[in-house]
Image 1 (cartoon, helix red, strand yellow):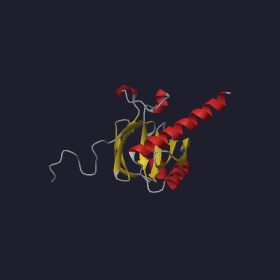
Image 2 (tube, rainbow, N blue to C red):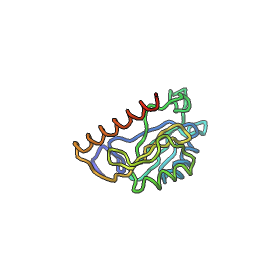
Image 3 (tube, helix red, strand yellow):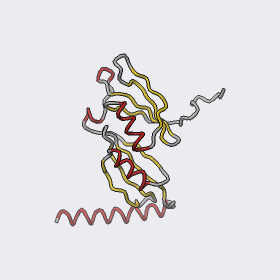
Image 4 (cartoon, rainbow, N blue to C red):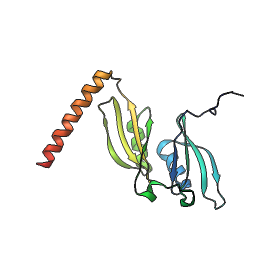
Length: 163
């Protein structure tokens, strides 16, 4: 038995999300991201109090929204305070798989200035997922130059749109 305080298969930080209809969410994450269901714990009402899925080498915990316990999904709050980020071998294939499973585009897939092939989707449960593949590693100075160029281009596009 390991003396580690972190259970085997977990990382120091493990995301936990609240969803509406946790069973449907688990099925979606299986189709969209190749998730594997690790466990589910139904409550007295039959709704999922706690479940765990594994995507790649990471566990994501999830549970059903429940106002009694002050657990609210983005669908209940009409907003999302954060997002999840997936690094995958093929961002294009993973992005398309998520769309085919029912996700919607929040940010189109592109070669981003920081060196990733990157896009963002929203799942039907209100959570946003960044999907990325590292295509080139940049030094700090290369990253800053790329960011400056991207910001200048974005500013020009905004100015043109306003005129």
